[in-house]
Image 1 (tube, one colour):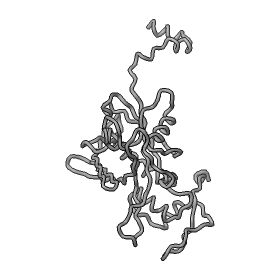
Image 2 (tube, rainbow, N blue to C red):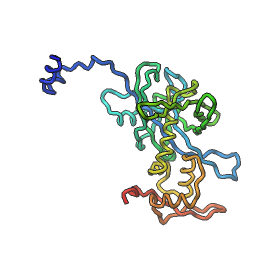
Image 3 (spheres, rainbow, N blue to C red):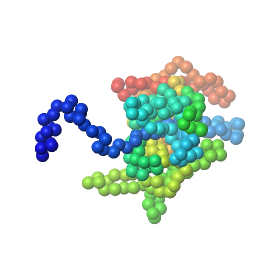
Image 4 (tube, rainbow, N blue to C red):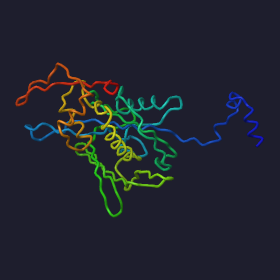
Length: 291
């Protein structure tokens, strides 16, 4: 009790001067960066237009742990930088990508998530137009590539699972996650846990699946999908992007009514293509939700 009284009688400056931060063990902090884009899939049939696919950016690690495993870009936060500074620095160092919009996704703090020790990671998510980026692996990665990603829900007698599949040319990666549901107080909390040892480093399969779910939810009521688009785009291109993210077909009339307030017409059209009329080009209306 006397210690409490003594502490309360100190000024904040006096308290901080004598405070010993080493009394508490300090975990390390990292950032992981989840970036989605939509790219054309090359078709063997030159007469067919290439299909589009949702992609995630992965890097191949050049050091232990998980040497030569694929992972999300990221790394340790330095003592003299904030999270935002760290995440942009790591992205530049590992992929040569910079000046993209990033939003905080989730913080992962499972005790054994990293074999090196007690390491907490804050994950960030972004969508970007891949045409604006030339991937060049940095000092912390052997390779940086766009992988197509698909997520399949599977229900069995043993529970509900998510199977993730990643493809890049002849590279195939897989992960299997179990859906969990725990009662916390009076509320059920849903979660994910790695069910089988997957082909990705650390717990990055959980981060990617959570990001996919967040992306689909945000696509319904925000303008996040427009980060995938060029400055000018057709409504058909925009609809295809929404369909890829939501993983379902959309009725053309309903979709155009929904996005009408989010876009504005321009006086420009696409170039002429054999068998196709030029299409009107639109741009994103950044203040649509303020009207």
